[in-house]
Length: 146
Image (cartoon, rainbow, N blue to C red; front, side, top):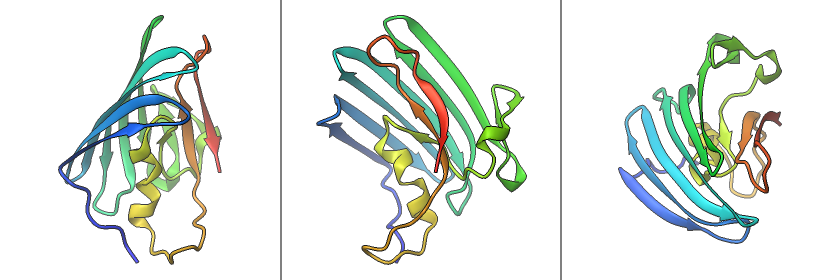
């Protein structure tokens, strides 16, 4: 089974872990979106622009995070063999990760599913760098998850 193609645009609310919204604008090879939310009493926003190939393999990611303390931009590029460069620096700790997963985004959670041939109710293992938004005064994090 494969997922249906993404619509040209979509929007939805985030509930439970945070109160917020996400919007997506999709075109062939490109996913642009933004999440704005309040979590643990802290307001923040994450915007992303993701280049994918025809099979939904992540190639390039531009993202920005906005909080009361300012903004932070990040540039990620996946080289051949799932090797990652983040802000111009090689990141061996992310080797083997197929995608970027913004904890704040429902869209990035689905990237591996668009490539997968899967069976309903059968788990699919994926590895991706997880980027968490800053909440409760933290600076956020980027770490590999598997």
